[in-house]
Amino acid sequence: MKTLHTLALATLLGLGTLAQAQTSAASAPAAEWKYKTQRLKAAEVDALLAQPEKLLVLDLRRPDELIKYGSFPVYLNIQNKDLEKYLAYLPKDRVILTVSNHAQRAGNAADILTAKGYKVAGATGSEDYEQEGGKAVTHIQPPAPRAQADGGANVAAARQP
Image (cartoon, rainbow, N blue to C red; front, side, top):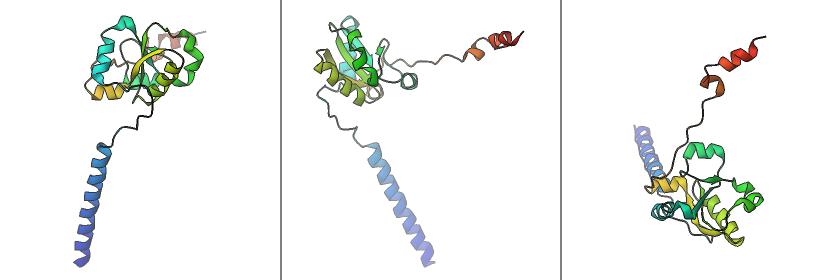
């Protein structure tokens, strides 16, 4: 009987520790901001989006991330690893908003752009923006595979002699 009480007490203590760990993880702060560029809140992003003629939204994520998490209605996508290679294509007469999932890559890219003479408004994360109540993120639906989109007719036609 004493073993049963000990086991029950150990289980309760374990559950309390688990609950405390889950609470700590849920309230853990976002990654430390180590960039010179300002990390923008949803309201600041919305103010920029309200003047699209003055703004370039530069999304630095991979295509699979754009599909999974969505992005802003109109954006230029250059993956972070390719940014320096495509600098000549970026306009210097517009303010740039850099975007990634949680703004870390966006912060890094924004610092690079600022050092190269571009006007950068700040960096944001599309997931963070949505969690703060931002409504401008558009979710992309990937196209159906070709064989399914045309009912397989092209596949069947290609096999005929």
